[in-house]
Length: 143
Image (cartoon, rainbow, N blue to C red):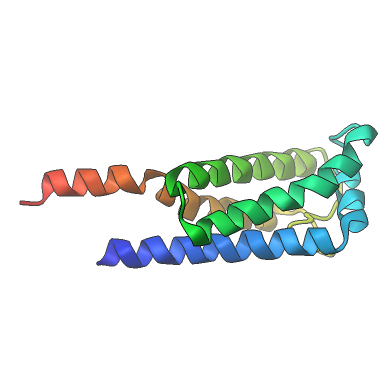
């Protein structure tokens, strides 16, 4: 029962994060393009395509968390994407570049706090990706 509650909490949390984040970026793609440009990590020719298509990937991942179809696979993809986010934020911060995170709109500077926040989103994604194995192990242990 407790695993079921954790399961649904993880799905709802990730769905909310990714649907909201994707929506904010779709609503203002030029603002998101400026944020990506400020990271100074991408060639200028990739900024507009990334800012146009990337938010839709977040929407698809968020919706997949709600729908639940092939959940372990989409959860693993979500964990992978979050890992890329964390690396991008950490590299930008380590280089001393003062840029917005861009995660939830403008005005959120990259800092150790934003990196930790994004890293905390990794926990529910990893749980959902590994949940079948966790349940299998618990069944082996219990009588």
